[in-house]
Length: 311
Length: 52
Image (cartoon, rainbow over all chains, first blue to last red; front, top):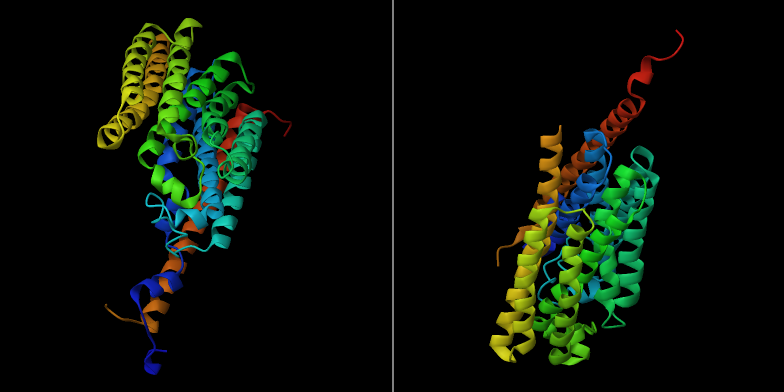
């Protein structure tokens, strides 16, 4: 070939070479995966009963791979709009490093592998919940709601809220009020979190026709809805302390972080258009991640300490 | 822009294909280990609890 003097550009050569391991890893949305693993771990640790550590590691691996499958299938379906959005333009499919068919096959193999393995080796209730999570994220959120309604992330957020329930089910083999409460915390957290992002990324979404709330209803209505959901979220965040799932430390963390969350949501609500408004939205977006992490970490720390001291 | 020959492209293609094959082999080995460990954990002492 080289003797023929055929030459190509580095980009074309990259595309011809197929995806690297890193590209396939990026397809699994590793940052989302890490949050999923963390919340699932908390679900496992706070659940009553015990699970052999080896089975616990297997369960977490399956949940992580299931989340990765969701990411890959989401990128397969959304490849057309990903390439036109600043935030997602560098993903492997828009860059031509992985073909949509490869992403679909990769996602499907991971999804069936993760669900089957979790069901066979750990628990079928957990396996069924993982299957529901993947199906919900892909079919309900990505295919159905995302491009049709500004309520996309409100309903679709359920997919991101299932992991602690899966972790809980891996240990207990069932679903209970406590695990539903963990679900509700993430479910109510999702709208203010993503709408804060959408407030300063509205143009991106508008360009590709995704009807995020700021695009459809305007920034003022979005800021109002962020405040409403934040006011619903904070009491739900404190609720584990009220039903005995969390202790004093958790109560303290959830109240303090909840107060800051509300203050930032109020600042967004009162906020102006332009840079000042964007800054308030960015602050809320960044803090919302810390808020969720702090609540789950507090639960984890309390239950881990209880088990260690009780042992 | 720096030009890349088809030969370079072929080498890169083969290198990535080899890496993907190794990754698949490692994942399969990990799955075998997972099923083995889970079987032992689930059976526990019952492995020895049978008439010989």
